[in-house]
Each structure stands twice: as structure tokens, then as C-alpha cells.
Amino acid sequence: MKIVLDTHAHTIVSGHAYNTIREMAQMAKEKGLEAFALTEHAPQMPGTCHEFYFQNLHIVPREMYGVRLFMGVELNIMNEKGEVDLPESTLCQMDIAIASIHGPCYKGERTEEAITAAYLAAMENPLIHIIGHPDDGRYEVDYEALVQGAKEYGKILELNNHSMDPDCSRSNAVENDTIMLNYCKKYQVPIVMDSDAHFDTLIGEFDMARELLTKLDFPEELVLNRSAEEMKKYLKK
Image (cartoon, rainbow, N blue to C red; front, side, top):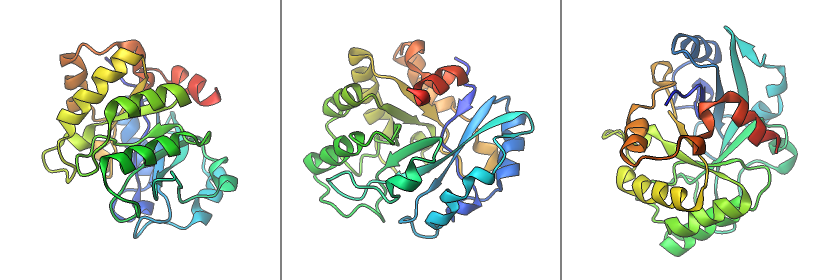
């Protein structure tokens, strides 16, 4: 399965990544990607950029080195109410928005019930497109409820390649992704597989995610970023 669009990547702006926009775009070209999304960490993540950064993204060219750029954000889900850390007035300017739970930013309870409620509440936000790395075992979730919620609200669930790296701080990703993907097959819920790259050589790297999809015989038509056109159709919808 060829993936032409990486919808989750970071630059030096996020504070703990190491390359510029141009360096990421040039590497995306070398990797054969047609497009990628820059989804910098939203303001509540320690060390990242101010809201002003996202408000000014309209000045960035949407194509570099022949690669299409989607300018977006990785929001922080703050609590069980699904509140995120950019206002609607800024969020509506983003090409793509991922909502994730990160330890330094999440202030709610960390029970399975509370984490599930947080994801489902975030899904109600029409300006959010993707739920990021819901496979992190540090934040237990009811995966059937998560997938059913994605079905109801028309959201995409992320298969995060970085989560499966043995050096990643997230836990039990492969086991949790297996459960989630099987429910996605059952309920016909689309996914994207992403690199979550914080260094240029990692953009477009999906080997672990692709291996798991192959093992589970996951339907190719449910992987939206196999086609830039399919992804654009979803975003317009």
C-alpha cells in the first residue's frame, strides 16, 4: 500500500523537533510523497509556539519542491469536556486539525471512562479532523466506544507509526492499535497512518504501521492518505 500523504509532522517550531519547513518539504520530495501536513503542537504544549504562529500560516506557500503542504495543528485535548487549546476563530483557518492527549497538557481524570469521554467530546468539534495516537496505553480507552464515536461524528482515527517504535514513551501501542483497527474494520471507520515525524528523515516512514495493516488484512479503501485526492475530499466534506 503506497501512502502519498503524511498528515502528521513537526518542525523546530514545536520545540522538540529539529528541522525547518523547507527541510521537511525537501525530504518529503526525496521520499516520494505528494503532500504532507505540518501539524505543530498547539500552545499548551511546553516549548511550542504561540497562537499567533497559527494565525499567520496563510503566508506560507502551499507547495514547496513540488510537494503540496497542508498547514495544520496538533491540538491538546485538555479535559473530559474535550476542550482544546486553540479558539474556534483560529482553528477554522487550519487545513487540518489533529486532537491528541499529551501528559503535560491533559488536566482531567485519567480513568478509562474519563479518557474515553474526552475523546468523544473532542469528536463533537466540527473543526477537528483526526484523533491523534489514541493507542497510548498510559491513557486507557474503550476502543469500541472510540470507533463508534468516530463513525458517528465522521472523524478519522490515526495509526501512528512512531507509537510502535520500541523507543517511544507510549506504551502497548501495537496491542491497542490491533484492537482499534479490528473495530475500524467492523464499523467501517477510516484511518490515516502517519509518521508523527520530529526529524526530517522520519517523514513518510510507515513501515511498522504498514506491517500491522497487512497482518490484519485491513481494507485499503479505509486508509485515506493513500490518496491526496481522497484526503482533500474528506477535508472539504
